[in-house]
Amino acid sequence: MRSIGEMARDSGLGVSTLRFYDGAGVLVPAWVDPVSGYRWYGPEQLEEAGLLARLRRAGMPLADIRLVLAGWSGADTDLVRKLLEAHLRRLERGLSDARSAFSAVRALLDRREKDPMTVLRTAATGTGTGTADVRPAVSAPALAAALDAVRFAAGTDPELPMLGGVLFDIEGDALRVVATDRYRMAVARTATTGYGGPRVQAIVASPLADAMRALLTDDAPVRLAVDGDRVTLEAGDRQTAGRCVGHEFPDYRRLVRLPAGRRALVDVAAFREAVETGPVRTGEALGHDGVTCDLSVLKVTADGGVSVCEDGDDDPARVAVNRDFLLDALAAGARDRLVLEVGAPTAPLVIRRTDTEDAYSLLMPVRLED
Image 1 (spheres, rainbow, N blue to C red):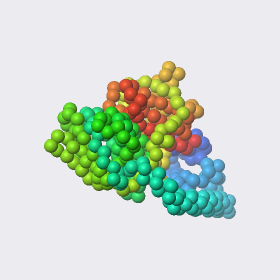
Image 2: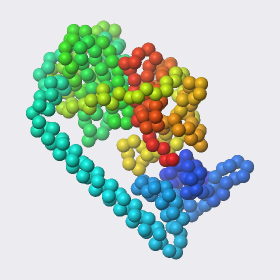
Image 3: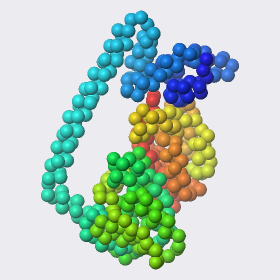
Image 4: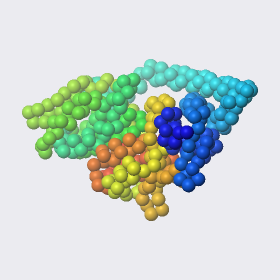
């Protein structure tokens, strides 16, 4: 017999997932201790758990998974084969529909690239690849704080180099620093002097951004220069420079226009401990098909706080996020108290500072198994 922890380790399903499938009647333990409530699984159930994990990864509906497991050990495999074939046809139809939709999108993209007005509009925004010469001054501590607030969200996917660094978005007397890996985004704003012109953007690769951060050790102003496809940070007689990433950054301003959610002020130390020691659910790791990650399921309580939901809590307003991403965002907030904004379960979780609306991070929610 295997305990639920051993079963989770051997099957790769996770303790919370096994509890969910027990409650759903899909994979019920062979025996439950009537005193302690501990779940125990028989040796033959490890094969069922492995089968369940594969079907789950293939996206089979829960009702069909239940029937496959029920008919798996029977002599007549006709039902199981028909269910597998039916799901495979659904997947193939879905793939065919997706290919058609992507073909249409690519055709639109091709037309957009051939439209000379589109090219002119792109060049006018200034993305660090034109001939703009911009040299605003900025407070070294303020820029250091901005980089610290967003660096954790920078992407590492080599297929998406435009997300593999930090965006410097200069407009008027403001500098916004932005990073995103698609699943989380962080934005910080600081004031500049000595420019005041139209919007210019430059994507700074993560190693160069880290080198810039290392220069920001004094209180004196520093100068950020964007000249053509190069970006330079000058701090007194020291400087670091490099080429901008030769891609456009997505329009992050569209991505942060969210409906207002319920706000709750949290004590960061206490909330971090609750997240680190509280219950977790198992979900698919963002960006890694078939790989699971620990999820923290949160909700705003009646007294205006935020709690980590226990197993069995089916509050419709709960939201699940990658626990590691949440802990990173709390650390990047660099405050004893932060504001968490919880919207719909499908809306990003927003972590804000109490002293400004110009520094915040967003975490994409993860769909729960149930």
